[in-house]
Amino acid sequence: MDVNEIAFPEVTLLITHYNRSQSLERLLQTFKTQQMVFGGIVVSDDGSKPEHLNRLKALQPEYGYKLVTTPVNKGLGNNINKGQDAVTTPYTLYVQEDFEPKPAFVQHFKDALAFMKADLGLDIARFYAYFSYPYIKSYGKGFAEMLFKSSILASNHLKFYVYSDHPHLRRSNFLEKFGRYPEGIKGDLTEYGMAKSFIQHNGRGLFFENFNDLFYQKNSSDEPSTMNRASWRESKNPLALALRAVYLQFKLIRWTYDVLYKR
Image (spheres, rainbow, N blue to C red):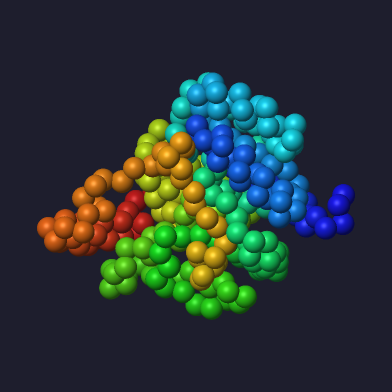
């Protein structure tokens, strides 16, 4: 082993992939350049086109990952489930293929792993988000603990995203505690289903407060994002903004009911 390598033998890097082999190669090369070495690497592919699948197979000797495939696209839930099933180490670093770690990541990853080893009640440490988690308490070294508040008076709908599919470290028994990801539905509903289960099973998680400092999310014109949002949800039109405000209040009420009463 290179004396400059930073080894994490207890952690498997789990990457979910679909039709973005260039992005995957960039992600793997960045970890290699940063000299981060994991106890294993699993790439879970969701029925990519032949040209991408062939590229994944060609990259295997260089990066030494286990490739888990499926003959047809089955959605994000199935892709994460079968990838997690292939992990054999105590911890999993989950990253989708369109992300890339920044140089600052390695030190904060060390901190997160140390926290999870010391505090056996922690289930997840999140490294990236689009928005800050609304209800937190300081934990240490740039991390805060997320505090889910069930009261409807805690009216920020982002509180439900205690769990997110964005890059995070978790214990590899995650599916045993929180159940398997729902399959056969859209990716955003898959994420919500796991977030709901995480709350219902009293999951605890950390959130890196400077959440833009650790990862890039890169979507090129050649390999664009496979997730799409309704245009009215992104519009700045006054009518669209008013509709969005009503929609968010409805979502707050519905999701509160789901979390408290639907299992």
